[in-house]
Amino acid sequence: MEVAKTIAYSVTGSNMIEVEKTAIAEVKIIRPRKFGDDRGFFSEVWNAKDLAGAGITEAFVQDNHAFSAEKGTIRGLHYQLSPKAQGKLVRVIRGAVLDVAVDIRKGSPTFGRHVAVELSAENWSQLWVPPGFAHGYCTLTENVEFLYKVTGDYSPEHEAGIIWNDPDIGIDWRLGGVEARLSDKDKILPSLAAQDKLFDYGDFS
Image 1 (cartoon, rainbow, N blue to C red):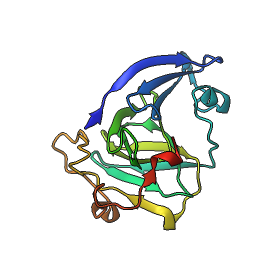
Image 2 (image 1 turned 180 degrees about the vertical axis):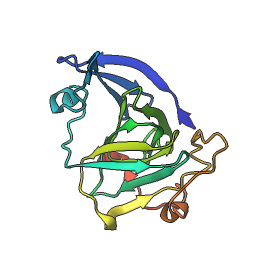
Image 3 (image 1 turned 90 degrees about the vertical axis):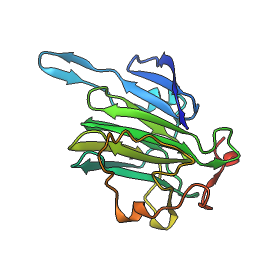
């Protein structure tokens, strides 16, 4: 089932971001402030001190930039196993996506539940997906540019995933009749129940 967002804003001391909590406490929506005039806008999209004030203290090691040409492109659900687990701070600078974080920490009170948030160039929101969660997104428009910071290096031998349409997770990807477009690799990922490569809640609680 999808976990609905609970609206609870807080603003850091620098007054540059808003933080919106979700029903899974570790997953957070970050909304950087925009300052605009007739010339355009300025936005401080990442600030370590501001994120620390929101409880996000992990160090980022890499920035990634992905492009998806067609609406209905689904990437996920992906994660890396310990000791190469990754946290992700994700955003969209062109188009819109439905971004999803699934709790896959065995023993967690929200194990198997997910948060789904629309991220777009228009709403300027970011999602913090901590280590211990599987992550994926579906493009809601054509020509999407998706940016994300990660807290760990890419490690192919630690890659794992969950099938996108697992009925036990029950994600509504908002395809609207459009056929999902997936990589061959993502089409054959196991269900959550069949996946034995998961995390323990105590590792990240």
